[in-house]
Image (cartoon, rainbow, N blue to C red; front, side):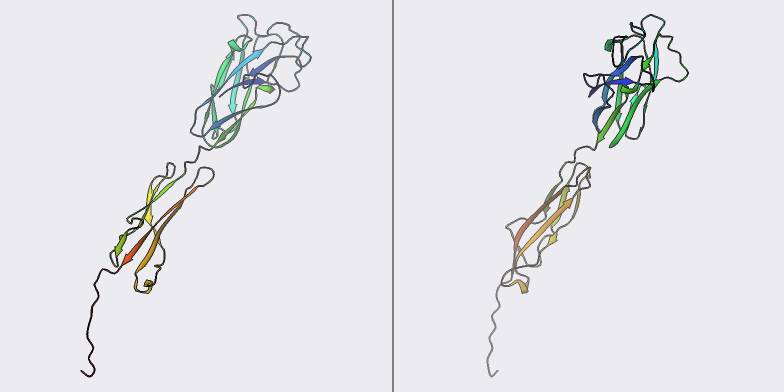
Length: 247
């Protein structure tokens, strides 16, 4: 992500402009740099734009670049209002001339989801030795860090096979196997339905093993589920006995 920055000192109307290149305009509206937690860094170019007395918005008593000359420079501090969301580097910079080609690249590194403000201001205690003044306000920009994308979990029923038949008393244990990129893999016992069919009271018939898992994000939680239905039969043969009355 590439962007542009402007710097501002309140109540200064005569100035060259310190700007960033987040977009193609140089204005006082805060630009936004969107980043993603765990994603790539963002960059912007910090540079000085020359204005003169003919500029109606930012007139300057010095018609030339205020940094023109080998002995002139502008030293600035760059800060993040919330380093736990994103950090910026370098935290101080020196600009020696006007124009984007002579600017300094700022690198913004996302840390965690949230929002922070990157501010550029003249370094305290420094003298630029440059004629005219500098406008810093539009150099400030916002960094919005979003959570990483949430990969949907996958759930598989293990231990039993759909459509298979198992002897009563020998049905394998059904297990839920979860695969999730963010939460990690896990397993737990499946939920077994009641046995259905005309001989259900004898433990013979159809049964379903079900699994459901809801992940922990990030962002919106996602749910995956699955099930397998199998049959249970009585493996013993019939027993015939005779009943004689009287004995």
